Image (tube, rainbow, N blue to C red):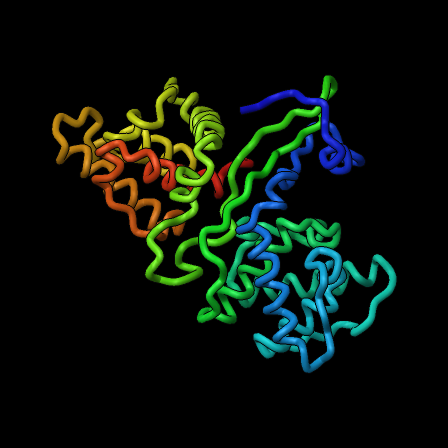
Length: 313
């Protein structure tokens, strides 16, 4: 939900130098003190320090110690055997950014990521953005150390901020840092389970953010979603939404525009999930019957995967 607010000290720091109309994502200040979030910070610092202990490197702050690329380069050499032709010590801003660019380009190449798939960039890392730094380290750990059991189900509340002529425009969202598959495979809960169980007061904020997101492309078809719990159950609006966002032409003969039975609805939802899987948007297994049966957590999981890819489209 969009609001116009007087910015807190944290938001004022991000507003400084932020051009009008430009959107930036920041951590909700209260999220930083969350025990799960702090556990992930400590885990990643301990991991890096263990990897680099023979080089007498000690990381005490992820954003402050990794921003210039020096430790990232050492970490890449240790976990991936990647040696880059960059200066060991760089002091000027220009040289530090040049070095960091080479390192981040190498990471994207080895992780086979397109720019649109990364949740970090040189400016975010160099400007010591903690959220971007965490996404980068989690991606490195998953790729180069797949047996490393990251703390699972870590999600944080973030705020999208945009300076306007009349104040700071803000929008809340929940961002997933790690999934259940990052930890013990026997764990069956994920970030949305935790959201509903631990912070049910935030569920409505998440739903409102998703409603706003889906209504923008659906407006092109003259459609409006007001109830996530029911309007996606038959798969029709979900398919139309995917078509709008992904640029698909959906043959009306491939799904039921007016489903008359539960089997028709399951067919529609299954078709939608297949499209998301083929587009590498939703990889975790989803039971189509859960959506048909109006399980809001499952519906949110699917819509959130689209949100992650297209939120700034």
